Length: 281
Image (tube, rainbow, N blue to C red; front, side, top):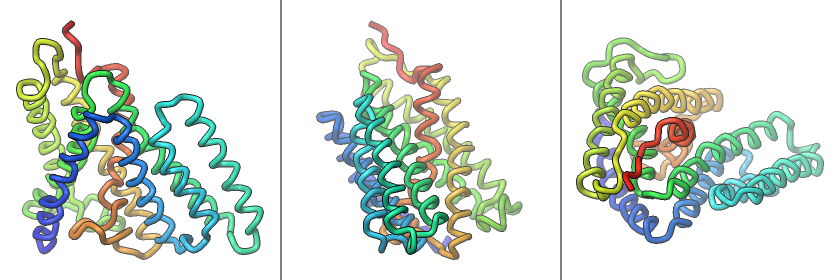
């Protein structure tokens, strides 16, 4: 529990900042894409720095520009397709221009990592800005549930964890922590639904689908672990503890949002079959 104090400090500073983003995003929807783009750019920078590729300026510029623009343009249709096409073409242009210095393995690491981060994070503006009902509901849904699953897993695992989940990849993760994360995630989803239904949304016009919230809570609990372990595997291969240090107790932006990359797209997918918000008018 040594890292509890810095984690709480980070939460005390970060939560008001997130609330401000949510409030202003309701007033101006494009802000979601801009904030997500900036966060994604920082994540890609951390990923490249971890492999010591940040010094390859052309490659870094191509990757970071793509991951900045894509969340902003993802809801614009063909323009997002064009940006992705240019990213892929320019990536190989860089590889040809620097073929003596840039190994293909490093190019693949940079391109795949950038694509993964960008694809996952671009689901945030898709979910928030295309539902036509509430930006804040989906913003909170996407970020709250994986973070609560992680927080629940941390606390339960710290006190009751006995059986290791993947000791060679993430030594502190336990099966008890995973189960605690699922419970925390479902409870958070229910509480969030109640708050939005009775305090934020107009209950005469919009109905929260609590069944869909339970389903996404369970799926997020599993996918958040997959995301965490996947990026932990990269860290183990690179012999680093964290991708960054901007969040005390958590590490870098990528350490904090690795689970979001895997869970945010599921919100978009599930909403096509089980709408989270149902209009009554």
